[in-house]
Length: 90
Length: 397
Image 1 (cartoon, each protein chain N blue to C red):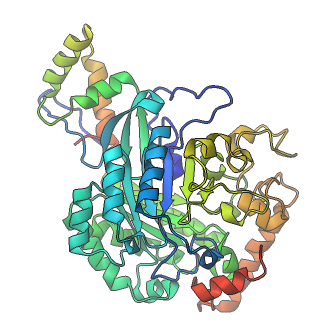
Image 2: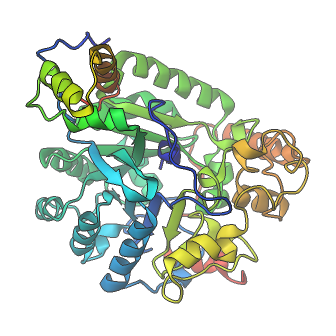
């Protein structure tokens, strides 16, 4: 079981995974040994900011400013938890 | 390789990949470059074609680089550098550098023979993303017997070097009657080595494994026991190491999608430039396989007769044609269909709806009898070698 991420956590993309834009698929993908996950735009926007420098709080502020929205913290927390469980984030 | 990992939305998280225009295939997401058929090992279940010794030509560096560029332009993302033993190519570092520069996720599929500290560093520098290292067993005796080499200790050393260089590592072990009882110790070995993934690939019966089927086929009890061990470990180790275990087709009632759907995801290129919709497709009769030295990859992928032959559902006969599952399994494996019925367009006999399903049960039964007769002893096998390749393929095509 993974604990809920705290707002001070600084999520980082695991080095086995690579995030990249794929023109042929018109989407962001996560590549790992012999596999690929196709990401929707919001998942990609979150993962792009998981650089080990941003805390979750900073990341949420940044996303809300970039997309002109409010109140997305629960969704971001849920995704970061999911991504951590999948081993994408450390 | 787990092609299922290449299905869009494997995560269950994301939106669907934009569907290709009607009548057009999507991109060949997986490019498998079989750089050479040369190999220091002689595995009795090798996935190279039985007649490999009759195909000795190899594309040169510039030709491979061009194939990579063309495939990337079509949307390929994963590149498997395989063989034979790809380390026998002296230009491997150059090929990796080119592929990495194009944006491929680069996977080296190797026996470990020839992997030195210096080469690991050079490959890292060239941008190699991941290494898949094969073992034949967790014991020296069986590893060395099955590959007809003395490589067990070398592979152990190579595994430590791979991790010391910081690569993610997939450990691959092909399973059958002789090592299925060792699944627990094989998992322990992967954990000790720090492998991120363990691919327990049950033998599928075509190519060399078809020649050796009666010496390799497990019993259903062995499979169930091994599966239980895998389940137990999965629950215990969590995400430290992801274990893939695929039940061999012969023990299933429903067939699996051939290559995730023929001509939908996978594009293989043999050492001599032959383009393959499935790595075993060379054995299928009447399939005019295109070659990258005489045709562009886009044309091969989109329009060639070979890649269109079993794409979609239009080629199907009954019972597939009218079956509710036709879009789920696309009729299964054509190589199995050919080997068991003589017709690659027949329903895969693994399917319980196939009129030839009894043939699969019969082989499984023969395998059980052979196992009983052997009383735990390993029977003689036909090892992959140039001599055996030429002998077995004499008179074929």
